[in-house]
Length: 125
Picture 1 (cartoon, helix red, strand yellow):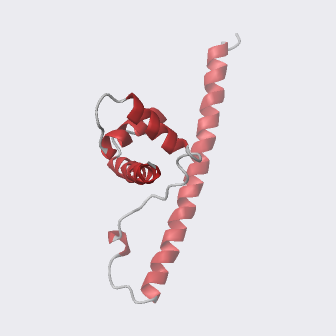
Picture 2 (cartoon, one colour):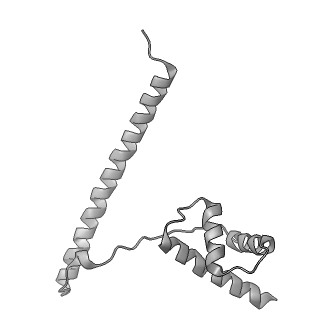
Picture 3 (cartoon, one colour):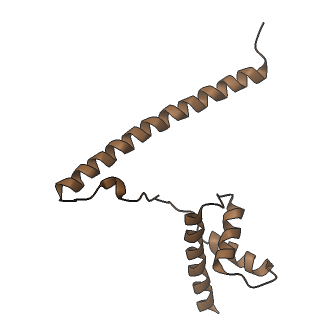
């Protein structure tokens, strides 16, 4: 008896996800090797501490298209019945973009960008 369409689709999806996982594992191993090279270079230049004590930092790419954050801030300020702090606006932006609202680092980053946008807007008025 042949498989149902649902089973076929789920098998195909599982195969696709397994392939992605293999690719990510390969990428993880490559990054671990690069970290080991940097650790060795630190030792070569006389670094005395434990390289594992250096806190991890995520690199973020472009988060918004040109003028997107400015437009979002203007809409949020226009629609708000009360004055909002930069953190409040950042929380709304994060929620509207569909990002993780529990990421405090992200919230702080966006709040800083909102602050810059508001400074530029205040210079125009």
